[in-house]
Image (cartoon, rainbow, N blue to C red):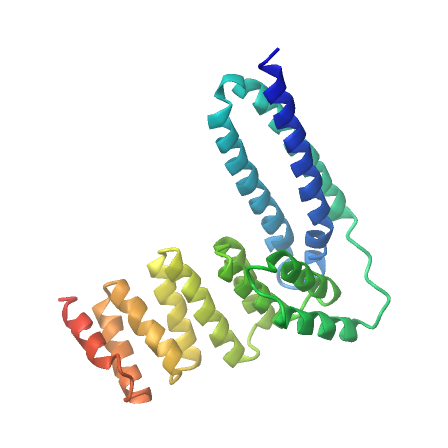
Length: 263
């Protein structure tokens, strides 16, 4: 009898979580990838929904499993039921995305972008994310919305989602707006660096430098990542470029010492 009470409480908690998560599906479903040229196969929307769902539920199941190990089998059955309902909700909203509002599209997009500028990346994360997804639903090729979305995810350490957003917008841009592409490569390199993927960080920052060879910020990052990656050849190349572009940089002497230590 006493073992049933905590099981009931856990199942009630899981149903509450189910309700909260399902309410978020309409916003995420607004990422209409079928209208995004060159990227139908990426399934950007579904990757974000599914990866976040799996991560959150896995963490919750692991935590509760430790606390209530003595009824682990029954909890597992509860989780199977909840996950089934979540996947059903995901499929429902994927097949029936929210209808577009009747108001003028451009006015709404401008209003949402302006509203987001006054919201904090961390304290207002969910609201900012929802606003950006609304914009993308109205204008699937709105590159700025994807860029801001990637930065929002990076600021909240949702690195996988951030990478997806940045990679996606690079594909949307194609060969257009090289300056914007360089900025995206710079931000993407920062994500790789922060997740200790130094090889990809180095290759990505090189792309930013290739597109904007005299930008001090990109060259500074190029040099730092080269040193972190213990790539002396790249570090010397970056040092020479940075010295030419920004000879007043106060970190040049320190960088020179670090390069010498690479052997």
